[in-house]
Image 1 (cartoon, rainbow, N blue to C red):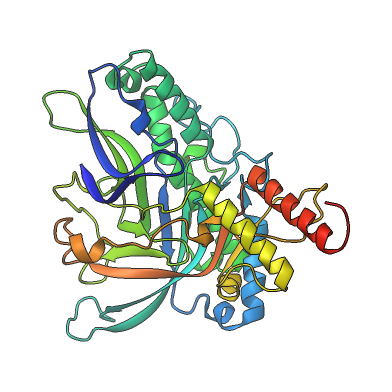
Image 2 (image 1 turned 180 degrees about the vertical axis):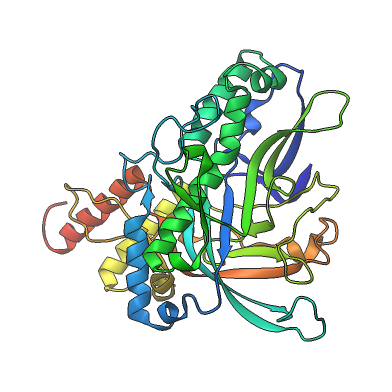
Length: 415
């Protein structure tokens, strides 16, 4: 089932915004359709009115808040020793057997404050008095880390041996039913802890509800979220006479609490509310109850690296900003980049996602009716204080070394 904005990524070769239904008894499953980022998605908390107004109104406090969030939230992109997410291994009650670190697990991850303005009634029981409300959301987009990667390797290895989906997921441990249960929750658990860490960094954790993470036996606490969106999901279809599994490389409405889709990083995200302003649930449509999760990638990583390198080289020559929108980005985004002892460049290049890797969302105005969203309120969340992963270490080292050599040449030294 091809959804709007469906494509195969130019960079990772993974399928996006497509729903597959697979015969659970058949061998030779096409493993190339599966994305290693299993059950990734978005979790969000709608903040109380005025919770972060003082921070947003003061430029110094904005920068302080961005620094605090950047320092408190780890990212695999900036530290090779960091491994985030719970393990796939668990005891007989599906509880953690070891401690784990919550953090951003990939270049598409992010966490921070988003602002939305939408029309709704101040009293959900009264109609005809709608007005524009400005609301703040604390949002995290991330995956399940080590649990997702372990599940992927075990599943693909089993399927390549000729095992059917039914055998791989309903028996044994490769990955088995326990593995599927664990990976189903891993990304949501990771995002819930990240949200709480971000709230503490912003000094607003006392304004948010949290609960103990039962799968850790209460060792960790996690934010109580209003939205929990799931993508890259795998589930068995109930009520069929034969074994049918659905792999959804899009937003899976049946497994998600609420509905959302992503535009590019600078443009933000889109959340869907009911006509009365409540979280939209129980969506069913002819696209196997799915809607697009992300927009289309339009540039490869290699092309982006060439563009970033050229822009920063020209910026050194002219003593100007490399990015055309540097001031706006600097007031809203922060990222932690790896520091290399043998590279003296002081540049901190923007993450590649800010250089035009993806198009903006383009399906809502054309396909709302077909996707069952015609009566939904479309609420656009714009980034205000957001932490991103930096450029991956290998690519960053190459880029910084190039800029350092260029700087040496300008200063009359040897490259």
